[in-house]
Image 1 (cartoon, rainbow, N blue to C red):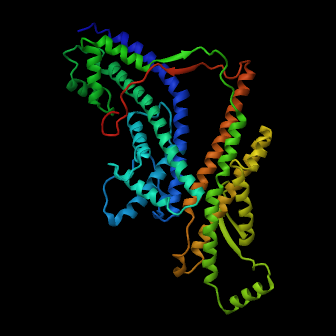
Image 2: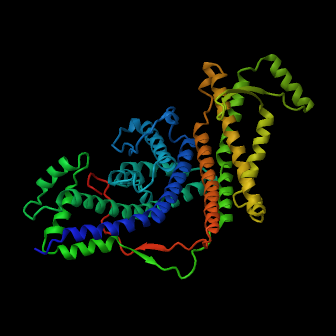
Image 3: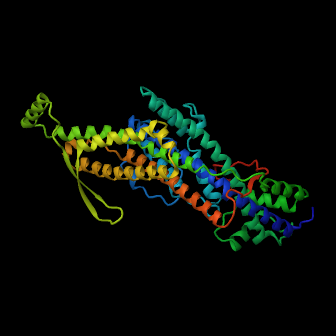
Length: 485
């Protein structure tokens, strides 16, 4: 047996893990958040297309779901008779879980652990987007492949582009996320082993260091900590075998990050690009708004058809003969003011509202590489952020009004007509996600600007933080089964 020297190894391992933690916090977690955001956005687009094409049903309880911890949706087999029902429930749950992960989960080193990494991994691998095939061994992957093939039938060029682009981004994001989770997984494995060494095995002899003894000690000295048999076997090999020196060196080398002396200052942040990305994101609100318009018009027709008596038909005939403007339709809506919490009543002239909404959709559509985007690109940062903030506010106001209109249509018709009313909750959810993402970019711009200003006040040149990168990574990939990743 090689000389144990466990104390020296514990000290070295602690220093190497500390350096890796800093690298993970500053670089890998930033990448993880970006890729998860892209993943969630791409799935949300596909999910809304499945709903729009009526391939799945809207879950009436989706918006009421309360999530406190990530949970991978059910993937067990289901009966063909319950196929649509099960896919509807599972995909609604999946969309909620991804929304919770991206917008509410604490993606920080001190919060994450082996179990939470496994949960994130389970969500990312729930559907094999890089191998979407009806012949897949994964039940959900095969089901979604069939669903997607049906979604492509008879669609326009824009919808086909959204589907193809979404699938491509999901596949790419999956690969990136898996790589980052692998780096995080290695850190948490070795951190766990370090904790066991510090609390349990550092004073154990070779004969004492058995799986049974270590398990008992963990229960006594580390209550609440899980027991990972595989990791305990690694500790025994690394600390007590004849090859312990070589194995430890391999572990340390897999964890180390190289700190490169910057040959030049870190590339300056392109603040204008952050703002222009925000403009394009809020421009994406045009898609759910266009879908909402289609449903609003159908709902309005349902309400009008319920009131068609002789006098109504006569007035409509006179209006068509005289080519007069349509009779005003005014709705009384209610909503809760988010700042004061008070109930607000408002009158909406439906035809005027629809006309204004169409204009807004055209403007927002032009933000996505259209003429308006080109014009805004030539503006100053101050002018661009003004446009971004104003459009975010306007879309937020539309979201509030549309939500109230949705409630109005559902409660202002007869029970017989209520089934004909088309809800817009999925589109409102997509609209909310767009607002959140645009706001995130706005906040990112402000935070980066503030950081640069602070550095200038301290007399430091912006962007002189050294870049770190891993020397190598473990070849152990996260495990989606019950193993310790």
